[in-house]
Amino acid sequence: MKSGFFASVYEVLLTVPRGKVVTYGQLARAVGAPRMARQVGYALHSNPKPGVIPCHRVVNREGKLAGAFAFGGLQAQQKLLEEEGVVVQNGVVDLNKYGYDFDKV
Image (cartoon, rainbow, N blue to C red):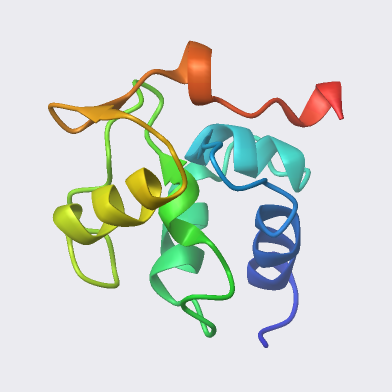
């Protein structure tokens, strides 16, 4: 597994439970780099362990799925989320219902 920032992203993302999602910005803040949401995206795109590191649980700040989901596209991300019980409507997840709050753990 990569070291440094990418490894931190993967480590924190592994704490997000099934059936929950986080935003790129939340994940960046959780690893101590609040201005690096875009780099979180790069880390997810480079996921060394698809199926283990749940990059499908990351959405944008509006709850929209990632159009460039690295491991199969939008439909694959939606399928993985729905298998965990997350409802996706028109490519959007309700963050109030399915959002995970790192601060409340």
